[in-house]
Length: 296
Image: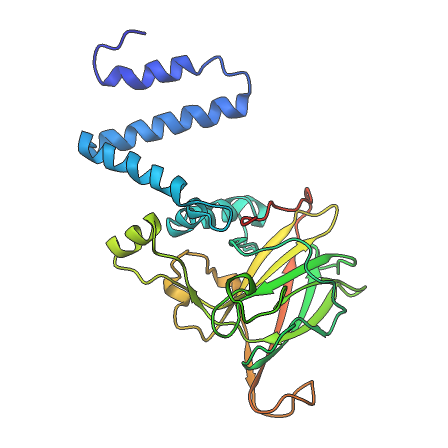
């Protein structure tokens, strides 16, 4: 098609894509072109603005390395990651879900740990945290034999691969649910932390006059054949940044009830304040698969 005016451009591109054999790919490409072209028309994007946008996208790729994924960080900072998660869980976005973002710090091969064991593997000062969890199906039936990965930041706000003071695999563990769908572990209460702002994402955060912090949370990845792998974060209810998470990850279903205690703890070596968390996860039937670790 020879283009005579700007209105013809979209039709020309759509016509060029009509022979794509994969119907789903054809559908996605057509929708992408329509929305992208409509965006440019809606804001009447200037040539200078287009050049800046291309440079910005290029910078996202240049900033991404084996140890840092700026593209994933940007997706979260635009709320896109959370939108994709909610569209694909909770009966395809129809009901509440305990699914959430994977985040950049998940690692394969966390140490297998007996239920009730500690995932504190090097001295990590902070209030003790005792967690009891149950994993069930959509009918409320306990799921036995589900493999559960746990990981979280320290009370100083660092994951172990960020912090040379922490031992390898500190604050990480892999558990198996019992016949009641239950497992338990001991750790320390996590803290919120800042996302990196030395790249294009930082430019966005500053331009929108937002802080760059995530509220404190525990990560869960629950795997069981026959069920869709459940990735979750359970946020600490007393964190002041729950409503302003820079990655838009906090949903109502994921605000955990971290209860503060001053009395006797489940372990004799705990003195002073400590916390407990009881949490139930619901898995949906579907394909079980492990994600690719974001950082290699």
